[in-house]
Length: 200
Image (cartoon, rainbow, N blue to C red):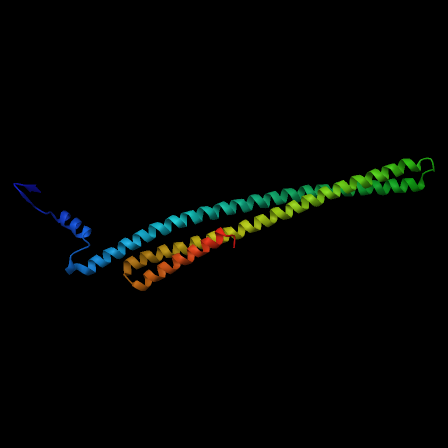
């Protein structure tokens, strides 16, 4: 407290001044320890933030993979329906050809017209089915790419979680090699995250 021109330092005031000045010369080890603690605390906060972003991206890519796979399944079903329709037209065409061959000459042109119409319809149906199959293949490919990216984000997140765990160990043990391993794990996780961003 202060009064009558002088100031009395309490224990808390002394601790604050000590922290602000980085510690007195005779307490160099404590100052170094405090610096290490601050460094690791800042490191942990940054890695946790990056890890949260990676985790979100992992969830988003997993959701996309499921959506794309669902789109592929829909297109495959539509293509299958088109091929069934194609088969039905082929059956009708075969029956028309048989009827033409067995019919009297004056009826043959009628059946021939049906045969030509079925052939034209079959061509259109086939093109539609092949287009749907191509779209299904594209959706499958996109789904696989998103799933691969999801695995990359998950790997990056896991390695960053290891780095955070090592940060806690470094704080407890005050071992430099643990601190170096912590930084190495964080760097590895960041690299894997960059690979995920680049779709590698």
